[in-house]
Length: 263
Length: 186
Image (cartoon, rainbow over all chains, first blue to last red; front, side):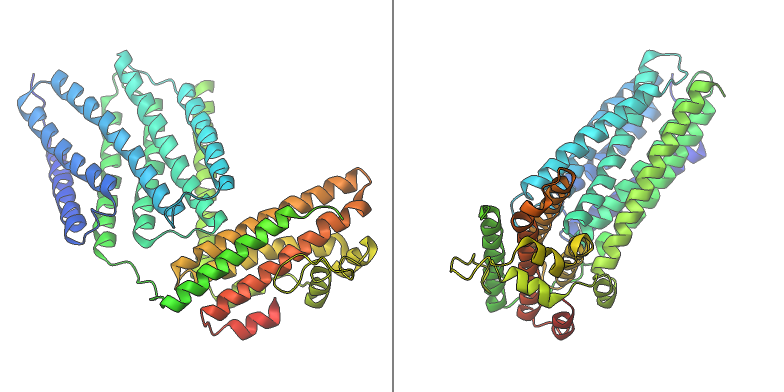
């Protein structure tokens, strides 16, 4: 049985398609794709997903659509976590090496705690569904939104705590995804509460809300990634060398301090 | 709405509120550090007598940061060190000033991203200070504070002194106009 697409469905599809095309053009034309390969791949995959799902919805049955949708959703989630890694790497590896051991310890804590909180809340959800696969879907989405939000908020907090500033475009991409994930928690909590047991209307309303927020994020990224990041002041070779010497001195101080013993 | 739904939605609301609050707090601090007025950062410096810090630090290190090994080094006793720094109040001021020193270095990164290496070192110094002060607090609980003052308090103060020198050097090398005011304050 073919799916019936409403005018609202077609609007979101068209807007999503155009938004992704525009963002891809910006990423390529402004040379951001080289700097953010995973993010670019995610946007490209979303464009492909929008196109594939449109044709599947138009020319295939509900079952095919369902399986295509969720297969692509898994790929989408994996790529989103890839973006988290990309943003962490760009923030916490400013000089080509990962931040020091104490920061890595904070990462380990963040990973463990965020996984635990996301898992507990996901287990607490009891969505009303008719099929087990629907339940898995709702729980999976809730888990993914929770974990993503925690990781982005964790990234903001750690970067401020350790004094590693975000580069302008990293901040914009992270803010967009962070806000999208935070709203995602509310939407998925709503899905868990209303469920799918004969209340498909609520699910559709929440899906439209999610898509509206996503479209806003797309517009934000298009505008922000089109703009150039503020230029860092050009460093003279002499100043560069002086800073390197200062760093070496500060590092030596630290070694000396660590080597101090009781008199 | 049943009991379980209330519990679930409350837990979600709690986590969401915590995430939003943490993000808002961090973003606010980042804005103050990177975009805020330089004077605002400086205003956060708690008062510490700089001459006393220097006196305590130079008792165990020379001006280049190397440990002193001459006969006239390490002559200050625990009581003098403790009085000069102002006791716990002074040490706490010193601990909170470490965050300000990091923010001052962080501020320079707006123009010179490579300064991150210096900030990173200062941050590690600050962690050393935090750790040593925590050892002093433990020593206070076990009644061994006096014996540990030269080991932890004096070294904490020497570390802080070196941090202030590195921040000043950073501003000097960056040829930043705020250097004179900074020299008067740290």
